[in-house]
Image (tube, rainbow, N blue to C red; front, side, top):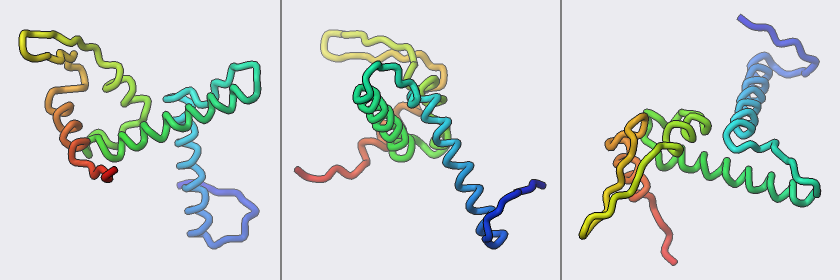
Length: 130
């Protein structure tokens, strides 16, 4: 049970839908602040901060694209911060043998099956010609 106090003159359904969308947008903003440090604008010049903000937005959008297109369904709803900490910051090393390379990853959250599933999903994406 919750209460909405407002001066908007909408139907009750439209009012709840409006505030739910607003809450979702605020969650996205919070995720951008935490995952890609979107509000960290510490440069002394205005235009440098503009460029830094643009780069943060691009990084956020790339993370969302990866989450929607490249990840399996069971982890597709993880936040970008969780993806960063559990998948991107995974320790590993490359071992070179005579004819091939081995990529050795620490199996914390990024298991061989999950990694293979992500590679299959990425390989299955449609690439435009040219």
